[in-house]
Length: 79
Image 1 (cartoon, rainbow, N blue to C red):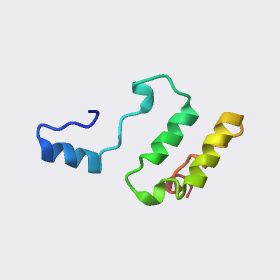
Image 2 (cartoon, helix red, strand yellow; image 1 turned 120 degrees about the vertical axis):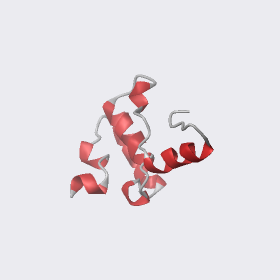
Image 3 (cartoon, helix red, strand yellow; image 1 turned 180 degrees about the horizontal axis):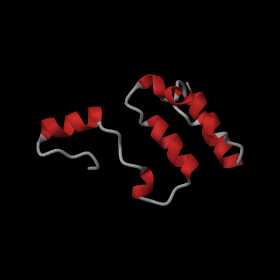
């Protein structure tokens, strides 16, 4: 478990407040895919993809080599 506390309450607290560890710390992934995954795991729902269509479009563009890094940035990062 990547976010483990000394007890159940601490573990829950970590899941609610701490960012998840980078996917690249577990396996080899492109920075673009890692950015997409991180955006999916944002704690603030407003910073995540707002629809499955947005996520699907980002993944499709990644596969086609046409993904703009701005598309994986959370809204707070683009302000």
